[in-house]
Length: 332
Image (cartoon, rainbow, N blue to C red; front, top):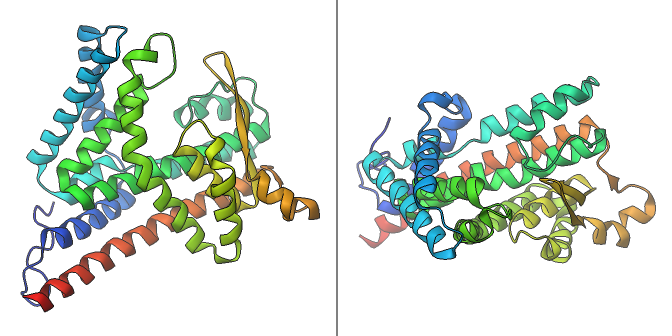
């Protein structure tokens, strides 16, 4: 693994740290794209999760202050791990999971397409946290697509963004925050107070990456760019998550479909907003061309959108690193 990826620069000209981080983040996404995640028994994120489970058992209290201490310890562990790894490319590769996301979504979608509802429902919890037992074909397809959109931020854009901004410590700290949110950020009786800090910090670190994802989706779908921007602007604010709503609304606009609506978490009903509805009502829906998610083709289309966004993100990181190197060379 390249520890100082790009330090020699082009033509022997040394590169700035920003250029190195951008190229390292791009390399990390490529590594994940080619190799995927390591096995669970040796995956650093799995080891981190085990450590944080033990810490939770030791310090849990039904108070915000206990949750703050938990999060502070987790961020410190993540950032220190990144500092020890040193390589931005290695840290982003360990923090990203785009290949796994698309593979699992394709697998569950394939089971759905073959009519194997049992397998589709059994495998769906690896993508979403909602209750799945009562979902019909459209509901399962909807859940897959929403997961592809939201997790393209968590597992692709955000690790690369924080790797580019803060190097290996930034990428690993981000993955620690996102993992803690998945573990304790739920609005359940046990975690309502203890998990508050993890959930709010996760919202903060994903705020910019979620909007980068939406911009890239619009840029890669110019014919529907206005529809995508309209869905994000008008529908996303009603979503309970300030970031998942943005990603899902952008995907709804790109697919010309409506996402969201009622669902259930741990037996409690939630009435999520319908994403894409405002755009559909103004235009395509009245013409009969905008509807709810229907079948496997919508899932495949969502996976293609996410795949193209990742490829474009790699290109942008490489271009940013190269442009910054040119600017540094001119000023030196």
